Image (cartoon, rainbow, N blue to C red):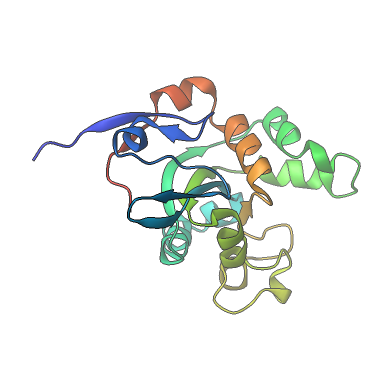
Length: 186
């Protein structure tokens, strides 16, 4: 059996495989087809933080993500430099926890991911749980794996617009051009 791979243009959220299969994934929109109405796929950005990678929890967290019906379409383990963390968390620069957050996010490897599914942003935020693990619901990633508010194991985009920005920031143009997705979409 021959598997065909297709290039994905992350900037437009359209993969050539989607076009060939007559699909177009657009954030928070639906489209009609002759067979009926379908929900569009949405993408969100995720980080598995240093506290979780240090404890070898990537597989367990990925299982929760996939168990929630989200598909991991891109994933890479990286070690951020201070400049990377400062740029990513620039919105928090004026906050008192900013320096500690940058120090924490550069303390060890992280896993950056792109997740896909219906209502991916909201669905991932639900499976992550509250920022403070003490307030997180049972069964969420943060309730089960977080060590503290800072070391809460995961980050997820808070809106489709921020997801696009974060994906673009963390998966550079050369990565997006070389990233290939299998033609099977589930």
